[in-house]
Image 1 (cartoon, rainbow, N blue to C red):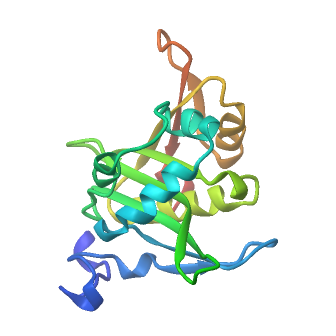
Image 2 (image 1 turned 180 degrees about the vertical axis):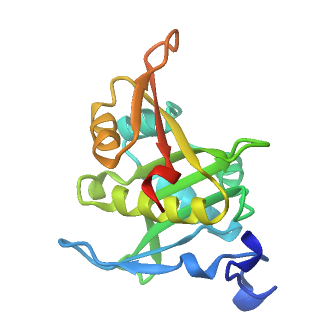
Image 3 (image 1 turned 90 degrees about the vertical axis):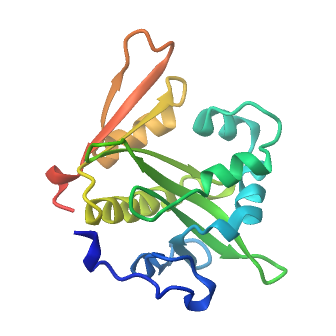
Length: 196
């Protein structure tokens, strides 16, 4: 199924082998600059590190369940270990005052070995929360996952993260508290039922 997906030619414009060019696009929010959505690449390590360390402690804890004061370069390199089929991460980027692009949101999935299910996660920079970016990133991730044979996305969040619970319900995820999880709820999205 994935053989027919458009990918960059080996070495094209310095892109990694298998880079899915069809996932690159521009999104225009109602209240801000254009956002470029594209797959993350291993050479995005500095951008991703700036993004993660720029999140507020509350967002880092609620979304990443990461309480350390700062992510390490090794942590970020692990997040960028993508193959564009079983492990994929999409970034939302905007231009900064220096003319560089900065990451303002990331959605990602990792296939659960031997299944058509994948664990997913999404995090949006504090200044971009509540503006529709999370929904746009999740839509993009759903389309990419379905095209790669994934039929169900699932994730976990802390029980005190009411905002993500409400968003997941609106988006169509099943949301349930996991028994004995110590305050974690699980979200499940059946991609077949959505017809993506």
